[in-house]
Image (cartoon, rainbow, N blue to C red; front, top):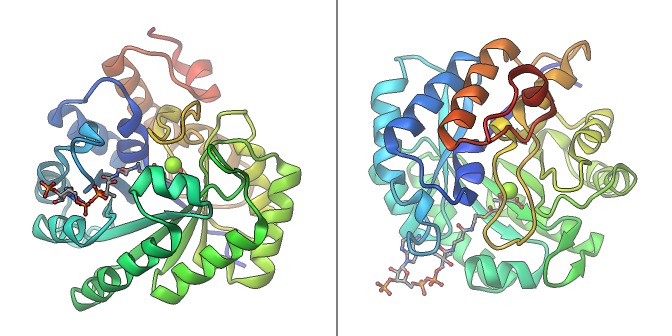
Length: 304
Ligand code: HMG
Ligand code: MG
């Protein structure tokens, strides 16, 4: 088991997609720069979905090419990724030089329908040619499985639907599946059951933890995952975020809270907390609101 941990920063996508205010392109670029300064190397910054459905992501192509062109140095291990729901999205991602994409589906029908307008089964049918095309371009594809604990429309998700979803995404060729507690309702006791079963059935190096923080359980759930051998975590700077199709769900677990928690754990994530807090400070000033992170509140105060 490795002592190295990967943190995938999703604030620019999962975070900003749910902010009422649409951030200017220059502010997004500045935020990426500050995040990179802290040592983060994997950033999901864009989403090639319908701009009428998620207007906050409408500048994705421009942002991706500007980020690739101005913020990456040659030989840089930094990876900028984007969500793609279908082949249309994939073509857009390819045309602006995206280095990695992520497909997204759910372990529950209700959310899948509202979010991407198709059934769970249809989502896999859509992904098959997408992954084939991505393979031709040697583009790594991540998979998201939402609602591993609860669905806002169907209630509690059966564990077997989660196992099936992970299996399907891995069989399709996703290099990793990110497990979404989309509503942020899961408790550590339930996380132990879900993540424990997945760890028994799959290689944890192919799984990532994507916990939203609505009910304040996300850090505890990540700790459960760490104990079970999971080593990849998604988080968002300042705890930004949510999903427009999961009403009431708040942001992802905050990156600064995760980095703080990892201090003293013996696990290395390569991120410098004090530098990271410049990014928290910047985004909270820009959006004129307090951070949704305990560490942000303790260290840099409120702006709202
Ligand atoms: P659809 O309406 O079913 O697509 O959308 P369609 O194939 O029927 O096409 C209808 C029109 O949309 C056509 O245009 C297409 O060209 C266009 P028209 O001919 O009418 O002018 N179109 C597109 N335009 C731009 N980009 C595209 C695209 N595809 C079709 N990719 C679609 C299906 C999935 C695109 C739509 O439902 C959509 O955009 N949904 C938004 C989903 C979303 O962004 N949700 C939030 C992210 S997921 C999330 O946050 C969860 C996660 O964080 C994990 C977790 O927390 O659990 C990942
Ligand atoms: Mg999410």
